[in-house]
Length: 279
Image (tube, helix red, strand yellow):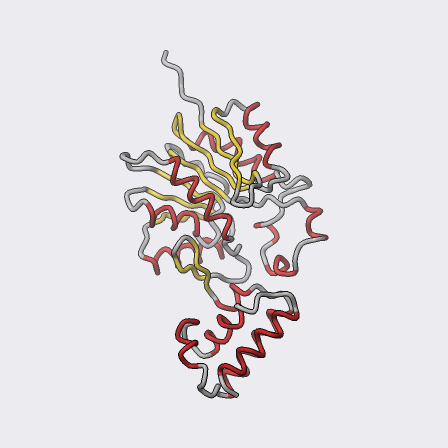
């Protein structure tokens, strides 16, 4: 069977399952150990039985709902290629918008100090370090597997990020920005979650009855980690972001605002630590 014939077959099966046919390029390219761009130059070649078997096996897993990113083994995030593994949250495109917001909060001419809470693969921390090489970037996670993967991604990309196995802010202080994509889904969402989420770590997704248990904890601790006037930037569900914004105001945060994602949903919370008054 030629590459073209197998590619068409895989694409048709994906479309029949209401998945993008473009995924066939990535699956077959991985099976052939080449890039999707180079695959287009090999359409007339014969596929080896071993490569065909790999491609068909991965297709079946994909049709069962297994995440494409885990089949491929990596994901592109903010221009960086990050390794991904089962059990560690896969970075989503909307989180790139959180990175953009965070970078916009950093002072241009001063060396920023940034903390990424719940780093997972290290995506946010590494993206900020890549965009701001002058930044001192820290990251925390309570999951040893995530900490190991984040450190490996940092080493492979040659980006200096200090990753700690610790909850929340790890008792650190003096940051200009605390940024996080915490678990924010309510427990009830399990009943309607897409099949792909079944392969994610529950603790990285769900956070109590309203999805705000962990974000609330971070909100209460972040002020201690921030220097006066420092910023907090969070990704949340559009359904519960307004609730946490109200709680931030009641706790004395300044400049509290919700920012919309590219689809116009208020997904991001930004708040500033109060400036200390002069004695």
